Length: 331
Image (cartoon, rainbow, N blue to C red; front, side, top):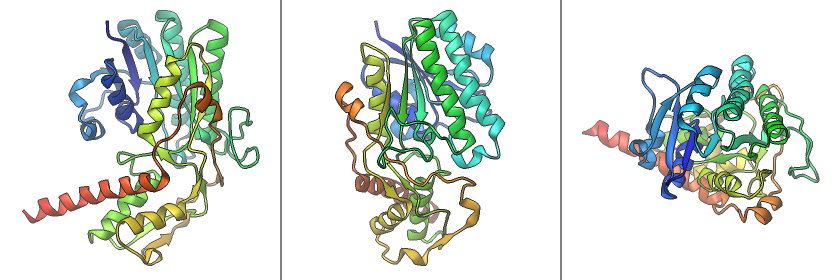
């Protein structure tokens, strides 16, 4: 009998990549969606899997809907990827961020405890929990948390609640502390996709400016398609544990910008980029870089996609989108 998995956040970036991986392994996949009047399936469509997933309705801020959902589906595995995940918006939407990212995890864990205690649970944690903390320039499983945003704070709550349910109720729960991971279906509000989308628009003549905030911030950027493999491997382990997932390299926003313009065939990038104070965070996290030795040793996981290949992949995908738009307009 095929394994079953419930993925929350199925319409985001990671959900579709994870669903594709699980489908290839023979899983029946449930995807949680809120009751939208017009849900956006573009990311699932991009990977060609929209019709292969059974969509189920629920709301991370409504405990009763999650109780009913787990009782009905009783999945072998739950991957909680749902979140208000835009760090910049979390200052203006602190209450909403807390309700979804923190309390939503509690509701989901309670549902598993009451109705499906053998279900394995994966919690999408984040490098933003570390904030300014580091050990010799790196962050790993032993680095203390010092979150610098309501988003990071909400994720720390969820991290410890996940561990608490593991230790208190013997539920198989894992935290994946994923560093920044991107792809051609990354949300347009995230700086990497904002850059590649803007570069593609400039290249195709649709705009002549790209407005950005802090170009000096450094992040450990990897490919989402690689990182969902780590999520899967965590729930296949004999014992539940928590893992830092990243490439071990970091690059500045400026480096990302330079490469993106280069792959689009534009050399004078500074001509098009304008620094806008509106896009700077109240409290910046200057430097994030993963030390993923534990994941390499215990899970056999290592990032496959290089930083350069990631940027190139994203630029090419956005150029293809806008060239298609121009072609359709001419017709």
